[in-house]
Length: 294
Ligand code: MG
Ligand code: MG
Image (cartoon, rainbow, N blue to C red):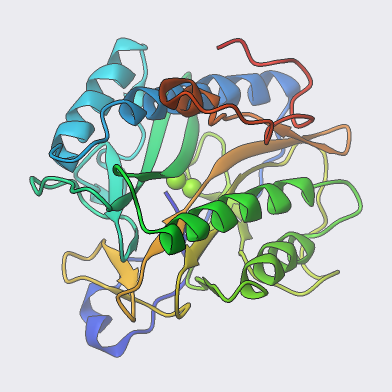
């Protein structure tokens, strides 16, 4: 789930949802392992969903599959009831950016759908997201997905000793804007731990050399939300769903990352999704001290 920093669309004034951002809490290596455990339950949940996502399935059905799987792992859905969110998954098709509520509309060929999932286990949260293609999609939309995901890894690789929050945001923003895409401003990434939204705020835009310095023990949810057109957004009257102001598509990719010995350590993984879809990827190489056992 993303952190809603501000929202100023005048027509949705009465539906503004405000989250409280907690303090920055540095984690011990033991605590980081507990966050990894929760993050990997999310990763495996997304892996299960990957093989279910096809034309005809509804997001409500995906939500039930995810909830059952998470509970079977001895964990709890992290979003269900959080700020009164009604479901396990945030599901955001096409022009929806984030925080969509599952419904009974079947997905159709050519759709994309961003799925954001949270898990709570041993008192620690995992929280990450992936944008899936439903069947064959327009090459222009496919490019949006490729660039958005690549921008996430650009952000992750700048989460290192000597850098600051602004360096990470600058990296994601310049990477995406250079290719003509819009970077959402009102929603940001966040620290993650015993609270879903801890400090610091992690914007996907920024100025180099500004903001908080990265230090060992920080755990971040880094999550670019990238629009095909304008960066501007609006919110539906349900008080949750965020969509693009121009109706063009939006993508959302999120990983959980710890800073250990000055380097980013990936806690979540997309490899479960890829193994379900038969995709080979080296994008996570070098971001983990010990290889992931699938
Ligand atoms: Mg999330
Ligand atoms: Mg998040």
